[in-house]
Image: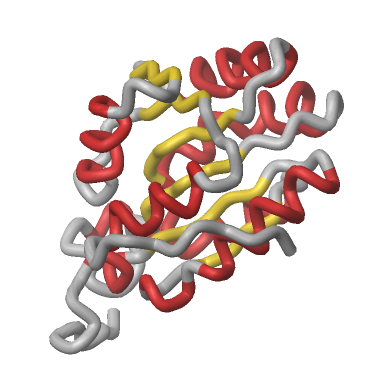
Length: 182
C-alpha cells in the first residue's frame, strides 16, 4: 500500500474527496445528486482536475473511457439509481477494454430513504454491479474510508472498475445516526 497524505478535514465529503485525489484521480464527471452535492461543489472549485457535469450516466462513462485512453484517471459521481443506465457501457466498453473507473455512488434506497420508489434499485444495486463485473464496496461511515484507499489501489492495479456505495449513514453524524428499518 502506498503512503497517503493525512486527511485534514472532519467533513465526510472533504475526507472522501481528499482520499480519491490522493490516488491521482484527476478527471471527473457527475450527475446531480443531493447526497453527493458537497462532493460536486468541491469538484466545481478544484482547478487541478478536469470536471464535467453530464446529463446521463452512460454519457459520463463514454467521456471517462476517452479520458482514460488519453492518460487520465477517471471517476464518476452519481446515484445508484443511475447504475441501471450504464450496465451495457460498463460491460461492452469499460470491462472489455480494462478501463478502471472509480464510481462514487450515493446509495439511495438504503436505511433512511424517504422516497419509497428508490428502495427497489437500492436493494438490487450491489448485485447488479457485481453481476456486471464492477466490484462494489459499501462505505457506511467516514471511519470506513480506508476501504476507498484499498479499493482504488486494487482497481488501478487490476485495471477494473470499482464502485463505492455511500448510504445515508455516511453523510450523517455518526453519534446521532440511528438506522431506520424499512
